[in-house]
Length: 334
Image (cartoon, rainbow, N blue to C red; front, side, top):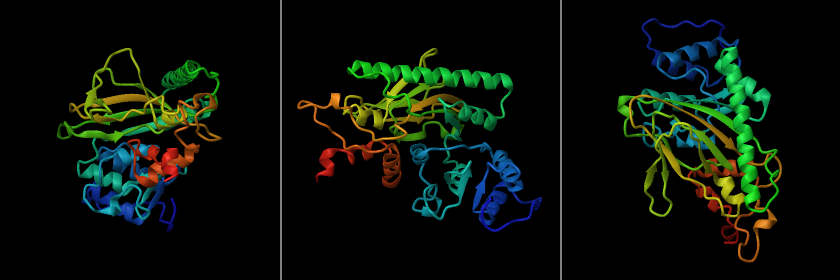
């Protein structure tokens, strides 16, 4: 916890509602770092969040996912923006994941649809997966299952990436050091949320995504770029869905198409999906290999880093592939 030091013990008015307590704690403690497990404020806030249905370990919403949340419940109220510099912020492990006041306000107003629980790790790194399991406080058996799954999906992602490179006449080891983020999403759809969007229209920012969707509950929709119509992706047991992100489009010099998609609530139930994102190079620029550039296929995008592009999407609040247009060589020369 940062800011003014507070007592180690907390007292509440017994008549005070959980919502009122949460808002009071937020006002008294603008920044709460949940990774400090010994902090009584962390324990108190987690219990209060859980009491109103918000999972106590909301972890690492990344930029496009935070932006994909619904708009603030009070239109024009910038104080509830997840990226407003004055909004109270949630930190886990030192990473800012957005405004707690914003998330709570969305939940209390019924706008946080779904009540989305996301936990994630870098699938290719055993330490990250171990920390991921610790965050979930899983049993030893479930830990082994998660570790095995993370390794398998990491290997699969690398194999798909290798095959894609080889199909373009390139070496298959180009993606070996690219990080892969592994995430479990749990949606709590309510009767009031049926027909509304759980995740707004967006493209994934990375190279490609491997999605193991809920086999019983649908909701994923992809957009036809030509017609603008949405195509419902029906659940199909025993399958995975693979789509390209913005980095995939830039790296392939436009050969791979980033996919605009969203999630719509189709029924009052729980929906679970497991996604693995091949992000971008940790070091060095994102740029099309020289073998993919010639007179018939001139270079489309200027070289850029993964971090610069992530920041651009955040600053421009463009999360459906629009930011990629700013990386076009033609736009740079204008």
